[in-house]
Image (cartoon, rainbow, N blue to C red; front, side, top):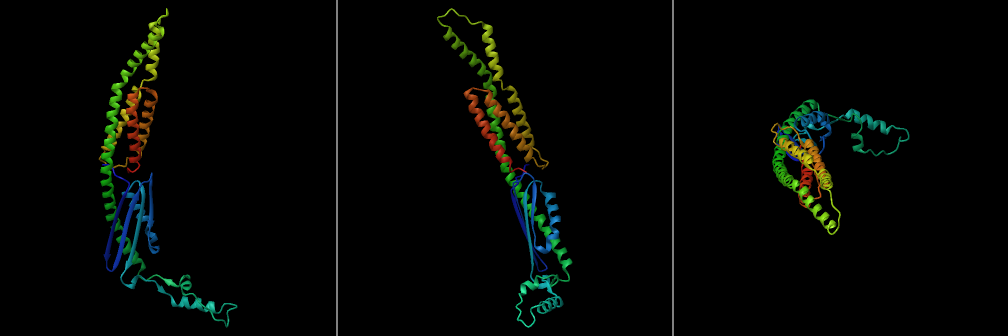
Length: 296
């Protein structure tokens, strides 16, 4: 079963006064790319969360956003009063400020090194949040993968219908191709007979046969039809895989090869019926190329 690269999942928890929320979004991308957005104090968890994402997802631009808050004030930072007083005294005693009224920006003071200190149980808090984020990541990724699989089923149905359209048009082209040479021979004979009418000139049969053989060689599309049929067979095999392996890039490459063969058929055949069918084939392949951009 193929999977789309577009998906979304979210989950939340509330445990021992701690609220945690995590969401995962994924969009199309040629490769895997993770964007992790965490609160500043939990940036150290980024590498582990990205590793967990890579274990579950193969392709796509994946954005993970997580945040947490606590009901009580246990998570708040503490002001180191000694350090703060030291900064204030140094500012007041700075050269050129003696005897002057000094206005101090409290926010700027709090940003100075050592003024704000993490709570004493910061390590324990990070461990709890880590466990919470990992559990939420499991749930969110399960939702995202389920959404990818639902979209994948819709993609599969569309790709199979396009494959069937191509197959039916190729069969019509295959049946039509031998008649193209015969019709060319008839037109050529009629044209020659008209040109030679009333003259004493005579066309050697070998010359006519040689001309027809040259045309048949130039317009022969049997090889291209065989290769295109082979690509369609491989395309079908990939769509029927049940191992869950990513196939999007392989499908994209196959679609390019299919279009190459279709363009060659279009350039070699001057028949109007084949031209109409090959236009439909090329249109279906273009749609396949668009659709497989979203296949994982």
